[in-house]
Amino acid sequence: MKNNLITVLSLFLVFASCKNEKKAEAEKKLFTLQANLTNIPDSTLFYLKSLSKSNIALDSAYVINGHLSMKGQLKSKHPELLTLLATTPEFIYTQILVENENVTFTADKKDFPWNIDMSGSVYQDETEKFNQVMYQRQKLKNDLTAIYDSDKEMLSKKINEMTDSLDYITVELIKENFNSYAALRYFLVHKTKFSNEELSRLYDKLDVKLRKTKDGKAVKLQSEFSKPKVGDTYYDYKAANQKGDTLALSDIKNKYILLHFSSLACYGSQLSLPELKEIYKDNADSLEIVSISTDTDKNLWQNHVKRDSIPWQYLWDGKGNYNDAYIKYWEVGTPNFVLISPDKTVLERWWGYINGMIDEKIGKHLN
Image: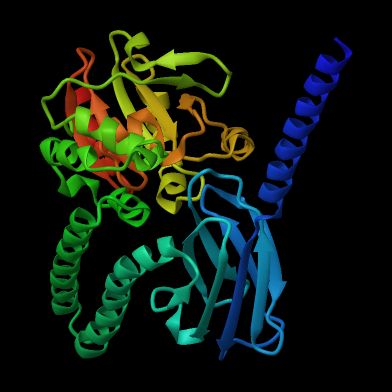
């Protein structure tokens, strides 16, 4: 009996030791970034932030003798998209798709944000294909502006043609490289270029690991819901409002519903608030405004609701651009609006904000 007890105890200690070693090994793994920079002054402060938690810096460092050094530990099971941002009047930044690994690069100021060649991350290598399209977009826009600066109408036409052409190239790149983290990231802003059937086929090609990511899950959900057009039946959605109560769109009876996809960081979203307040006050008996937040930080959302005294329903679930409503309604960016009739039919859809547009869109239905 004594020998058996000793054997069991020994096995437990070995197991505990192995577990502690694995834990210690995991804790040792860090993300590191080493960069050699030119034409960026010494003492320039850079922040490294996760795109999903933009208010929290993973690390910060000053440029010293043209060198930048950062480190941190990423907790996600999947690669994270990080933003490297300088605190300068000029908007100097770039994005990095990485796990806990060692990333290095050499860059000049003019290379930011899309022409930086990094090494150390296979995920960033995948991203470079898309970054080069973004770089060409930036370069061509500058060239066109220099040529057609005096002819604004022609400049706008040429830029639209260039944008359409490069969007097509990006969409083809997404299709060709769909089984990658980088392609799934870019899909989020080009999803309206795909059909449900096409998304189903692409999803079937995804690795199991990619299917488990929030991007993979978003593709799956997107493929199951057709983009609602004017005349289609609405999609239901429920989340917590600013009072902490759960509200579903189906709970709203005998009223028009104006969905307002919004973000605290979006200038157009904030600009639309005064007009929304006037409309809500004038049509409270027949219209319910429901803002749907794409912010991930609950405290920032709550402070925004209090600061701006939002009187209508404002829903938040913390999923950002991955919330069910944003996906089901095939939204890209903010602000976006969807007007729904009392019998739950989509009456209007539009993107962006211009003063008077909301009143014009809903007026022809409510009046």
